[in-house]
Length: 255
Image 1 (cartoon, rainbow, N blue to C red):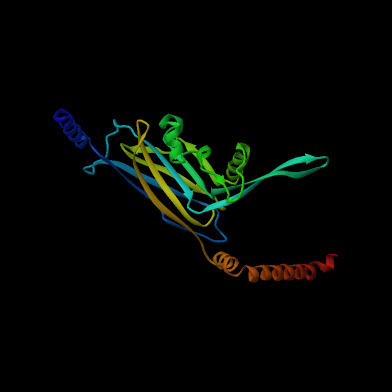
Image 2: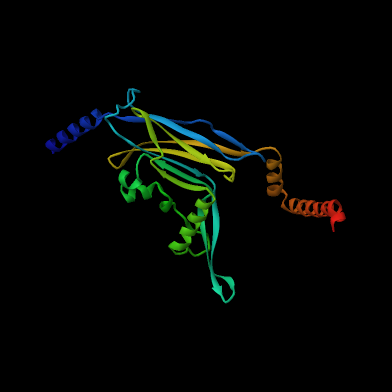
């Protein structure tokens, strides 16, 4: 028993002697306003890895860094599979998925498979194929092809992207990654996460928030649609009718 206690004390002293490390990270801007002239923008995620005394780790102590930017607000997405029936296409099957992020960006120092094991990557949802998309309440989750259809559509709209090798070290342990936000990035909070890996294990993390907000008339219309949907619909119909009448009088001499 005494020998066991002695070994435990030695192990505790050894563990205390191991140098801890800390991740200091930031973003170039923490708020972006979407207006009618918004054409997309870029945000830089940067940081440094320090020891317990606040000193940057030397270049000889290599670390892998993974940056993930994703929407905090999840969506429910319906996926329909079409099949050809004679000369027309019809919906043959449908699945609903919950927890679908409106935006997902990942960049890393190396390919993910070279950074950590699959179960570790799965735990933190690192990689497009590892985003947790579950069935919506009361719905039946679909096969893999339905899930792949969501990712494929989001990638086509530049809302999902993965850049292995997109994180670069500038000097020693100072790193950076550029995040491209497309014009159609959804409004709302984006969670910015930075993971530091050493020998396949997460050694430190940091989480920040990037605010995406609508401004000007876009904000007014969004609030009207959310708070007064009936009034918003009526106004849309009236505006469409007025636009049609204006177009008629403007071009009637050509008719």
